[in-house]
Image (cartoon, rainbow, N blue to C red; front, side):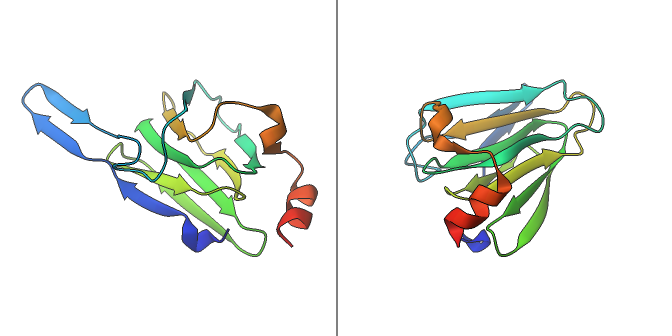
Length: 134
């Protein structure tokens, strides 16, 4: 996969005096069925998360609250994206190295994934990732 396969996806929102409702539906707003949802929160200042690639799992990453940076890498180039709104999310295809950093206090990173968790689905060594995408 290439960095150009990663893209921001607008989350449909419905605003009224009671607040905002954001809606994401598998195979409608995003290209995959949602098999797993998880969130990351209470990240201490200066700490990064992720540092891996997924072999076949697709993901949509949303700043449900607050803001953080996503560094994506396809083995050839890198890009940094600041997510700071729940109005959009970053779609990641498989085989993109991912790192999350620069979390604002009280940020919540929401992740929708196309696969159930399996440790064998992860590449946790950047060197192994580089060999896999070469």
